[in-house]
Each structure stands twice: as C-alpha cells, then as structure tokens.
Image (cartoon, rainbow, N blue to C red):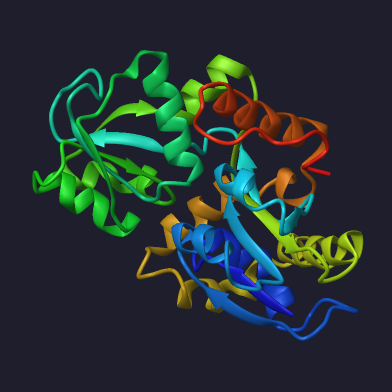
Length: 272
C-alpha cells in the first residue's frame, strides 16, 4: 500500500505504527511525504492508495477517492491565521501569499473575505515555510499561515489580522475541517482500510514516545516544544473518528463554499 502524507508532526505521529509495520493485518506500507498543496494536485492524476489532502479539495477528488472517517485533522482552536507586518484592518487591496489554492486555509480566507474581510489586490501561492519570512521582508502585505506558524509568527515581527479558525467557530459553532484522508476507489474495502488507519492512531495515543525519533526526523528543524504543541492541536478525537459533528462540519464548509461559487457542489451522499 502506498501512503502519501505530509512530513508534519501530526501525520508522522498518527501514522508511525502503520508505516513501521506495527498494525496487525495491515499490508506493507511505502510512505511518501509532501506538503498538502502538492498532494491536493497529485491526487488528481496519480494512483495514490491512501492520501492526505485538504478538505477544500474534496469536490475535485471524490469521483476517484472515498473519504475515510478517521486519520485526518479537524478540531477547534487550530485554524489558519492571516498575518501582516503592519496594522491593517482588512485584506482590501493587499498582496497576499497563500500556501495553496485548494487548501482549506485559502477557502476559509475567501469565505471570510466574502463576509466583509476585504478583497485582495493579488494572491500568490508560496510554500508555507516561506510565507512568514516573505511577509516580514515586505514582499507581500499579508500571509495566510498554517501548521506550526500559529505558534511562531510573532518571532518574525508579525501580527494576526484574523484567526480564521476562531471566525469559523464563532460563525458556525462547528470545528474546522482541515486535512482529510482519502482512499482510492477500487483499492480495497473502505472499513478495512479505515480500521488500519484508526489502529495506527490508537497506537500513537497509547505510546506517544514510540514515534518520537520518526516525528523529529521529519519535523523540518522544528523545536521539540513546538512539535508537541502541533501534535496536541491537530491529533484528537476527530482523528479517531469524524463522527456526526465532524461530517457536519465538512458539509457546512463545502456547502457554504458552493453557495459562494468557490467550489463545485457535492452530490448527495458523496462523503459516505
């Protein structure tokens, strides 16, 4: 089985057991690592058995893939931020760097902008690790940041214009759907594959120390304290099972985005 995930601590923590052959009954796994903007586009054409993508990319992918009910990133207090180097009150007329054009972060930013956050003059896709330095250097007026950047943006002399997760939760009362796990249609039986993924997450919770070396090896020079914060924020009960609340959050995000004309509408039952 090929498994395509990000090198971020939440993914390596959750998938350590599966990647290392520690899940009973699971096949041998070949792991590939790429930023989520890469996987969003790679999933369109490559034959990926199990892949991590943005929930915002689902409308373009569910003809080839099924959503698994576990293994992803969804929660509260974990949303993306729009950061700036100067005191501005909206995105109106700004040059904005974003981590991907089909990321949940960008979709949330567009929904917030449509609700009164202002219309940027331009938007450019930039690797997420390069966004904060570029904004601090003045190459962009604002940056949309994800992952561990919510813990470190102030070190770059930046301020938060808006916490899009707080805005979403306040507006909807729902958690934020960030990263989804998809299985290629025809690869196998959905519940069985989901069982392997869930077992890997359960193993991570039982013995958090077991994955430490693996996580740090892929953590892109992140400080151990930031790694721990990252895992605590993005790996939670929703990683074990989306449940009714998780599915409701996904439907709300993509339904609202479809009404705004930002994504294609999903057909009934597409998430099941």
